[in-house]
Amino acid sequence: MIQNDQELLVTQERISHFIGLLTRLRVSSRPDELALVSGGYRAEVERMQHQVLDYLMKPAAQTTAKAG
Image 1: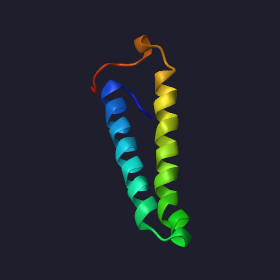
Image 2 (image 1 turned 90 degrees about the vertical axis):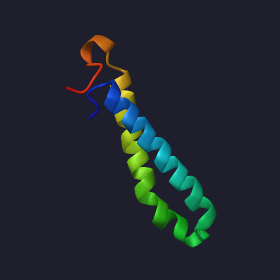
Image 3 (image 1 turned 30 degrees about the vertical axis):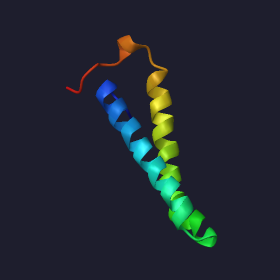
């Protein structure tokens, strides 16, 4: 769970990194392998995106700006 804006930024960077991996896997993997090699990355992106959206739905007053 994301607790503050710093963790939000790190999570967004991780999402971007994983999307980049998926982009490269889409090109470099054989069609019959793609689902197998990319499934874990996709699941992780979806999990992190859910956390980001949950965090962004909280009022700013309920979150801290920096990690403690």
